[in-house]
Image (cartoon, rainbow, N blue to C red):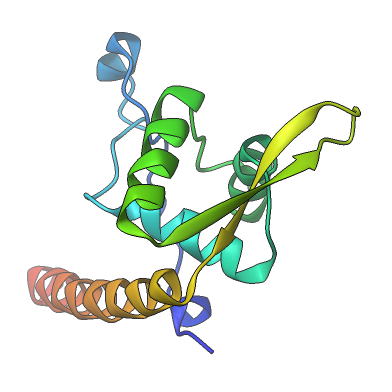
Length: 134
């Protein structure tokens, strides 16, 4: 069991950058590796195809996080090369052929490492913010 469920959701939006986002302070890039952690965590629940991953992350974050396909599929390819994911052929809800992504043991180990690293970073940020308020 991993520790990600204990981590508070940061109110930071959009994972993909678009020039129009520069004017909207609610649309920000996340820290490096955030997309990979969210993908790994989502796939630790069950195998999914790409569109299901996008919907899952959006739904679980109460629409705070939006993953663009231009960010998702390159990340999935990197993660496949790293051995964190594997794929199988599947069929979408609309009957179309699709790739189903599933977490490997190496992916689960990587997720645990990244969650521990995030927890340390978040604790540090929390301490800095607490000192700033005093």
